Length: 280
Image (tube, rainbow, N blue to C red):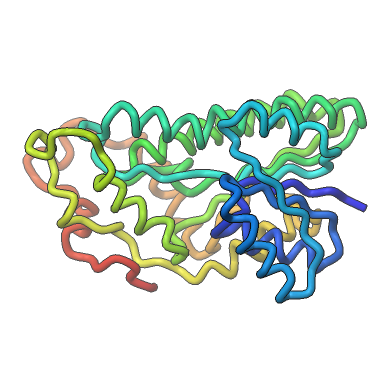
């Protein structure tokens, strides 16, 4: 039986994907950041009639990572992540460092330990829950987006390095989905230990500047990538935004440093005018 380890399975995409894979008969280990999440997830699994192994796995905790390396993982879904919102010039050092520790350093160290065991078996699959924020970026998402750009680079390097050993690598790249994750990103300023008078922006007036989709396509695509029904390296959802992403990436080549100077960017303006949790 295939053993799948999912990090960050206490909520969001990871939680639902873990439950669906378990319902399909896979041996799923749902890693949750804090012990308090174990009960809630176990109750949900019981209500759905599925067998789900739930383990405390904080990717920033070395002891948790060392334990996870011994679990005989065939497929690793690096799903754990946080989103720190705010202008690049405003985010405090502590919050910036935490963004990278959770989204980049922890997952890479966990991957190192598990990947080497996959190499010994000459098979395995490593899936990164990346984001369209790893391909493009928005105002007030620079810290989060940069962490996902890092994941994109790491995943691609890993793909090239592990192919001779029979280990597959893939990314799932969700766009703006209505799970609460994006809206919470625009609330993180409330925890900052700084002087609010020195901030460039008043974050109480800003919200996530995109309409958001129902998350079902991400659940389905992630499920299919893990089970092998989909073998694409990069998997953007929803499909309807793919062309727009490609245009954004291409437009950088023609951008001028003077474009828009003296005028508010359209997405900054939208952040002032949209309501949190606005659906598509």
